[in-house]
Amino acid sequence: MEQGKPLAGRTAIVTGSGRNIGRAIALELAARGASVVVNGHRDAGAVSAVVAEIERAGGQALGVMADVASHDEVRRMVLDAVGRFGSADIAVSNVAMRPMQPFLEISLEDWERVLGTNLTPAFYLARNVIPHMRARGWGRIVLISGFDGFWGQVTQRAHNVTAKAGLHGLAKALAREFGPDGITANTLAPGAIDTERDWSQYAHQPREAIAREIPLRRMGGVAEVAAACAFLASEGGGFVSGQVLHVNGGHYMY
Image 1: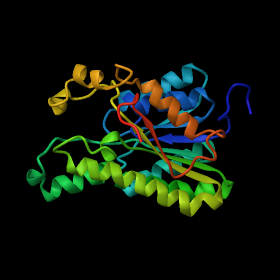
Image 2: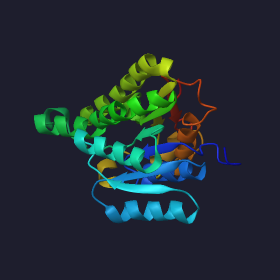
Image 3: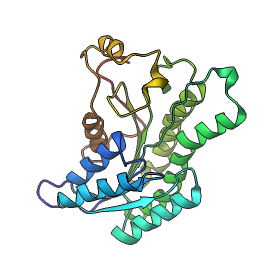
Image 4: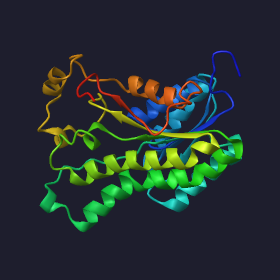
C-alpha cells in the first residue's frame, strides 16, 4: 500500500460523478489512491473534466458514459472498469432526480421514471459488481440516499421518498447476504448540502431558512459527504455494514 494512499490497488466506480456530490466522491477516493471510474450520462465534458483533474493530481481514472437506468450499460461500465484496472472493489450509486409533484398528479410513467432513476440503478450496479468483489473476498457498496427517505419531511415527492427509503432496504439486504464474502453495504444519507441544483424545485424550502433549522447554522459541503463515503469505503469502515450514515449537521437526529 502506497504511503498515504490507503485505497491504492482498489478500483472504485462512482455513478453520476460529473458534478456535485458524485464528483467530490470521485476526487476523494482518487486522492486516497483508488483508481476511479467516473460516470455520466449526458455531459461528457463534465466527466472528462473530472478524469483530467484526477490525472493531474497523479491518480488514475476512466470516464465512462453510461445510462445507469439501463442494465446493459451498467454491465458494460463494470466490465470496462475490470478490463482497465483489473477489479471492481468499491461501488457508489449516486444518481437521482427529485421532481416536485403532488401525489395525485404523479402519473404511472412519472412513478416508473423516478424509481427507475433513483432506485433500480443501485440494483443494477450491485448485481454486476458483486461477482468481482466475491472473487477477491473484499468489497464496499455505498448507496447515496437522502434525508427525505428517512425523515419524510418533504411533501409532494412521494416517488423520490419511496426510492430513497428503498435504497436503504437494498443496502441492508446486500449487507446480510454478502457479508460472509467480505462485502459491506451501507447507505449514506446527505442532509441539506450546498450543490448546484434547480432551486425552483425547492421553493418551499428557501436556502436561508434551511440553514437556520440546522444546529450548525449552515448547509453542508460536498467534501463532507465525500469524506463520509471514503470512510465507508475504507479498511477502517470494514465493520460497518447495513447501516445508514447521516451527514446533516444535526438537522435531525436518531
